[in-house]
Length: 202
Image (cartoon, rainbow, N blue to C red; front, side):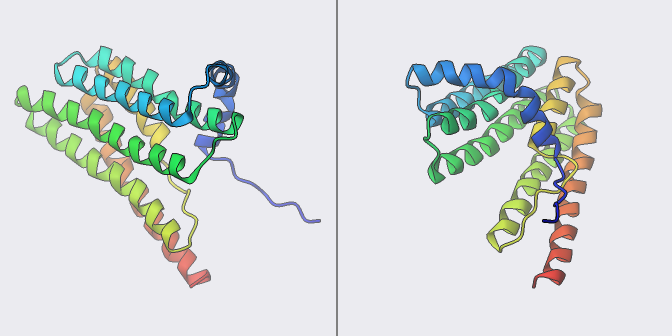
């Protein structure tokens, strides 16, 4: 049988590295009968709290809370598999709250920049917000019409890590500029990918 080459993404690599930490926590939660969807909602609530903190200008604290909250991305899925509670609604809820979480943090930053009258930084946040939504939308729409679209240089875990580091180190404007460029580049990359896929499998 011919072997197929499987290309691992950054997301795959990150999940593999985090498994040693996530699995024991998921096991502990399963023993307490916590539902995976509850973990998903708790993660969103924590991220919304981070966004509120960021909006008041406590950028480092908000970034730290956001990074802690982002750990639930791996935790809820691991718990669902461990307890055989995977469902289509759970996957839908997870993806939906991921988008809402990312938007909440960026709106928190936008609020802070607006109060400080930092118009240039606020525009960068707007570009990142729309670019991030387009990264997610291009994949969802591609899969909706039957094409796989996991390609892209800047998936959500990378965006979260970059933004978190930017907030912790207070390198917000440079990091936002990088995110603005790479989110739009990733969106275009996915459009080009689906175009080529459509030529092979119309």
